Amino acid sequence: MTFSIITLGCKVNSCESAAIHAAFIAAGYVPAEEDAPADVYIINSCAVTGVGVKKARQSVSHCKSLNPDSVAVLCGCYPQAYPEEAVRDVTSADIITGNTNKSEIPAMVTRFIADHRRMSCVKPLTREFDESSSAADLDRTRAFIKIEDGCDRFCTYCIIPTARGRVRSRRPEEITRQAEQAAAAGNREIVLTGINLGCYGEDIGYTPADAVRAAQVPGIERVRLGSLEADTLTDEEIQRLKACDKLCPHFHLSLQSGSDAVLRRMKRRYTCAEYMALVGKLREAFPGCAITTDIMVGFPGETDEEFAESMAFAEKAGFAKIHVFPYSIRKGTVAAMRANQVVPHVKSARAKQMNVLAERLEKRFLESQVGTVQTVLIEKRTSPDYCNGFTESYIPVRIYGEDIPRHSLVQVKLISAEGTYCAGTTKF
Image (cartoon, rainbow, N blue to C red):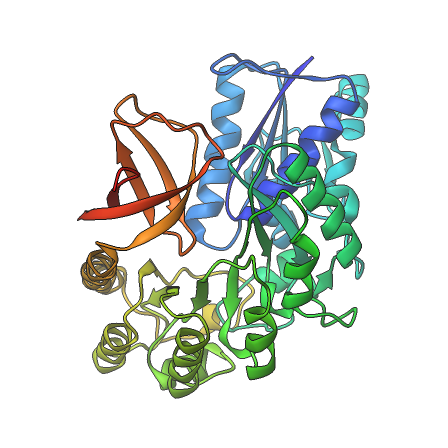
């Protein structure tokens, strides 16, 4: 029998989909050919936004339209956060399960095939890191390794603590084991990922720097950290990270808002001044580093003045890239119950304004890199005209007229900024 996995949402889901893939292979299943209908579809869902939930529902329906006789499995954050809703509203899903037992999905499929009884088995979240659901995602040039799960922050807009549970960390020796697997597979860069990555080790006595060191195995030349929370990076931890010689100088620091009043309503654990001070410390410790971020617009009660504060803060911080998104009401959160919701057309207008600023800041950052020589990791070729890759600071680079093998690390001179990437050459 064949299977196909549709992964929605974050890189943690990608790692867990890799584990699901391995479990199906071990059970004797075969991956479906591209564009061919599968016997079993697994939709690994996201619940961070309403759009994510909508995509999960649409994916289940689409899979059933491709093969009405297939077994459709809906798993992940959506059923974990909203189990009753998932069972009620996604009627085309044959099996509904959450985040705690993804490695058991092949056995669930076997039971369903035997009795054809719709199955819902969303279990409570555990307090231990689940190794069985955490394979390294080695399909890309950069290998993704999940090192942490869960979040204890309970920001007022966020459903993640409900969908993912409390902080659970992977032991360093397990990180090393998967890093060695990645190196053996030909990967040169590892991206360490988690739900609240900066909290890594709080439960087992380690810090993110320990995880970076654990991943610095022979054959791996670069280690990159995923998204971090500003309140988790202490001065001591910055110095410990600075001592990690393979760490990429790229820090994604989730901001959410550049207004102190909004941050308080969000229950974020830093002020704008503290965030800006952290940006300065990182730039001092890692000269030339890229600072990227997320900014939410239209949080309940956000005034025109508070939005203007966010715009001004982003300009001052000089982010290399901003992921802009409108606030999405998530049932079960504090913010969802507030009466002062920002109307959709205002949220949309603010998102457009912030995106215009984001594009300008990204252009400014890329132009500042022109003329520099940087190490680029070559990715899978997607065009006969150029090779593409990323610098250590995560600048997308296109190298025209040269044929460079995937996984190569090459010195490239950046010669121009072209929209969202830089053009470069190895001939200088």
